[in-house]
Length: 597
Image (tube, rainbow, N blue to C red):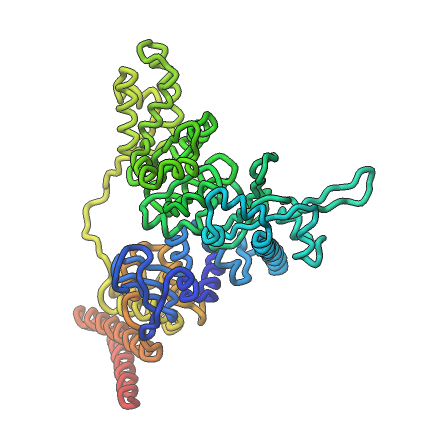
């Protein structure tokens, strides 16, 4: 688990204007920056980024959050991935817990930066080599690719020869070259001197980028008849094939615009489709589609269309993709499968039949439910008892992997019809998990969206200017607990979190933390995100007055209690006059401040 203290420190170091500005064109507008919201279509800017609050907010669609939240929403990254990407770009190492020694963090970060630099330099080298490689240029032109599309995907060329990277790296024995997979170390026979040579030779190079656009690996394609046709980088600390997708960095905006992502089997399919008007295509990296791939894609869009070659290998790949999708599909997501004729892949099909025809077959792709039912029944004779039983046997693992949903129910009904069974019988035989009926046992009560009165005023001030939490003492919190017990709980959580962060606390980091401990804070966070910048000094005075006012209300309430019971005994009278003295002191402090103004 990543420590909250690290997350707060990261948000404090990051400039959200710089992070958002990589993806959204921002213009200065008063104290904030404005731009067109990347999360919904709009013609007039309603998207604001506050450098003071380190927070973004869209008045059109309501999207809001910190730099971490923006990367998660825009790039489709997970929480941990977004934190790691931000940390890496700011020279920080994400600790697994607070006990990681600083020296160890520094060593890990240095290694990561060295690997990243090696990959970037290698990519730049291959791009320069492509410009002076007639054979490689002719090959790409023969595949119908333009110079513009080659530049967009940073295509390159690894020349013939064993150690061409020596030209780019002064120290060819640099450890990062081997650790990044760019060179291969081979021990000499009989204890002889080891050999080091380039992994990629005489191949067209396809750089693989992460969601930030950093090169993390390569796919190299042979131009002749050599084997393997595609050679991929090995797994490294930067690159895991089961998680990354080729072309996702270049395709992100196109995926949003199109409303779907097209998943293909090869690098060339992605590049060729982008040139032919389908820039929303990505590809798996020489490995089967994994649940991590599907999860990553479903963060980008609600519709995923898998496009596979029509041969037997394409069918097998489709089955593996189906298995990867089953745990993640639900009623709000659409998964489809497009099968091309046996002799075609997406690249060849679109060049023969044109973009319009290809667009139509993409739209007519087979829904996941139909593909599943076809798959489990295709080799079975449904006129026999055995054939129907085997169909159910084939379908059972897939249905058990699905979460309870309307879609699963529809598939169960379809399977029941195919196998002459009832949906209830299938659900019972398959032991399918049923949706949990949540019965409200507690007596109904009116939900209070946000505490009202002085405690809410205090929370607004402290959330907007977290260092002012230092003004809140135990007596003020006690007074809030007595006068407004509902709101006091949130106030206590807010003050404790802000005081723990100290003088450097910021709105963005504090709000990010508060969301994790109490969802009721979200409305208050939205309220502060929308308001214009406020002066910290004036807010400090306002908070001081609110604290005094609350203490005055507490004192007066106790005085009323004493008088209602008739000031019984000497102790009651002494307490009453002590309360009056405290009240007079607070009034004097207020009068003095008014005079100073």
